[in-house]
Structures are given as C-alpha cells and as structure tokens.
Length: 260
Length: 165
Image (cartoon, rainbow over all chains, first blue to last red; front, side, top):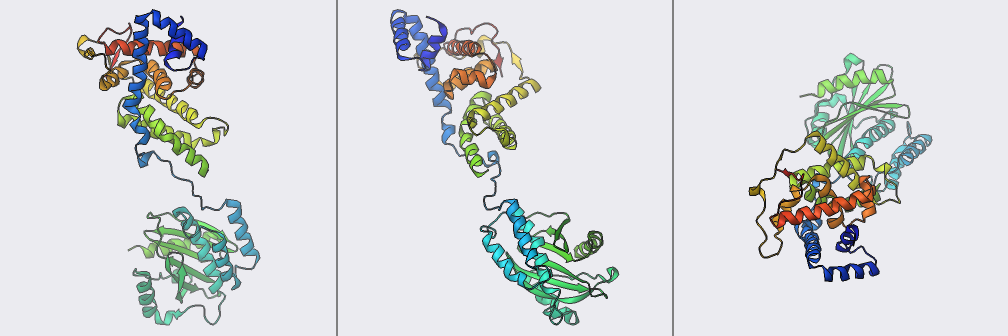
C-alpha cells in the first residue's frame, strides 16, 4: 500500500474502491491502523483548536476600508458639472435650482463619506459665488457698513467667532455677507470687491465631518477658481473669476488672518 | 468594488484561523492577516474573477510568511527530552499538546499539514498554491503527521526536526 494513498484515506480523498482496499489492508495491519487513526485524530484536534476563529468577530484593523457605494462614478460627476456649466449655472440664478436637482440625482450625496463632502465644498462655494456675485442691488444681506452686526450674526449662526479677513492689501474691500444653507448646517458667505468691480467670496461652511485638516486645494469650476481647505469642523473656500496664481496669494492672506 | 470587498471580507475568518495555526500566537497571526489583506486589497485588480479568492489570498499569505521567516529566522534550539510533551497515556489527544507540537514542526511541513487538514484543500491545489510538485506535498504531509504523532506520544521525532521557540 503506498503512503500517498494512506494519507488520502485519512483525508477522505480516495475513490470508493481504493478506500475499501485501504480498509482491508488496515484490518490486517493493526499498527498501521493505529498510526492512521492518530492522523485522523490530529485532523479533528486541529479543527477543535482553531475553528473558533471562524465565528470570532474580526478585529476592525483587519478590515480594509469599504469602497464608497454611494460615490457616483467619476464620469457621471463630470457630466453633471458639464450640464451645470452648459445651462449657464456659472453666472446665472438658474444655477440654484440646478444645484438642488443635481444633489437629488446624486442619490446618496448627503449621506456620503468624508472625501465626498470635501469634494462638494468647492462646487457649492462656486455655485454660491456664481449666484450672488452678479447681484447689483442685493449682493449681500448685511452690508459692511454694519460689520459689527454682520459678524455677530454670522458668528452666532455658525457657532464660531468669525473674523472676516482684511484684504485691502490685495485690493479687495468687504462688501458684506449673507447666511446660506449648507449640507451640514449654516454657511456664511463674505463678499469682497475690488475697485474694478471684480468680486471675491469667502464661503465658510460649518459641520465638516472629516475631522482632519487639509492643506490648500484648488478646483476650477467653470470660470470660477476656488481655493479650499478644511480646518477642524469648518470648511473654507475662496472663489473668484481670477487666475489661479492671484487667487492663491489672496487665499494665503485669508488663511493667515484666520489663524487664531 | 463593493462585491470584491464583500468577498474579501468573507475570506477573513479562514485567513485568521490559518494564520493563527501557522504562527502559533494571535498577535503575529493578526499582523500576518493584516499584511495579507492590505497587499491583496491593493492588488485586487490582479485577481481573476473566475479564480478562487481564498486560494489567491492564501498564496499571498504564504509568500508574506516566507518573507518574514527569511527576514527574521526564529531562534532554533535542538530538541531536548524535557521539551517533549508528556506521553498521552490514555491515548486521547490533548489539544494543547498538539498545539505545542505543531509549532515544533518545520514551517514547510506545518504549512502543508494545515492547508490539507485544517483548510481541507485538495492536494493539487496546495501544490499549485505553494508552487511545489504534488509528490513534495504528499511527502511533507506524511512527515508532518508522523512527527506530530511522535511528539504527541513522547517519542523522539524524526531526524532534523528542530524546536522553534
């Protein structure tokens, strides 16, 4: 009887005729029968020793991060953006409605993960920028002439002491601000203008759940450039239809002044 | 990706069981599983959808384990009489003794034995996974079982067997 067949008998891997042959052999060879019996017991003991791990809870550190099922495929995101821009979103009030529709068709957007919330920040800021900067009569709810009231009001609503940065050195003066709805809570928008009428908005969003700070990131939404970053539970986005380099210098100034 | 993630999660308990039996302690086992999952997940694109994901992950774990053994060979001492478990006088196997004896097997024997006896993989699949001839699988299996049996009954194991502490 060859050894490989005896091993296969232990593991129950023999065809019926060979299994019967091995068993006839073992009946005549008690020492061999005892040896193979010991191997069978090893198999059973191994299961008895280790099978509890099959039912044990798997430690969290062993689970790779789950891919975000609610995340729309990238081409779809791009398509949404093209539609939005094509419909005159940038620079048109129709954009507000479109944004609502876009969010809805996005399905799980509201319940989405942190990275997605981060990606949504510059888009929302650009849309708010596009909606309010063309306003001639009512670009802001509260003007810079009532700055103390403006700051107290927005600070109270966002739950954080806000200080609109001074951007005179960059050529921009505060026009005023307004309160906007955001996905996770109220949003403050401060608007600035230079002497040529170029407008700049700083979008301050509360309720960011990333729970981590980010460095500067840049997004181009139509003709609006956006520098954005997360600081604690607040997201900041600076939007203007100016070049990336100029906007980055302003963003640096804003960032510096926001530091406590 | 969601489906792949689910399939990978479904393999975790068996990866943990095998790693625990292979390494002999829970912490090393979970480290090995963690490395395996990270490498597997980062290369999930290389897994063929018609393949057996469990076998694929076990192959990754095998390679990682070999790498670990090469990097840091465990201290080996010659087997002494005092290290042998007491003879099983009643003939019934003591589970803890078997666990101890298992760790005294050379790693290559232990691996084959666990894949066959615990994972219940087919011999040809073990051969393919470890990239060794099936004859080598059978001889390692045979030697592993006999060495375990000798250790369990207090007999001197076959020559060249070392104790891994």
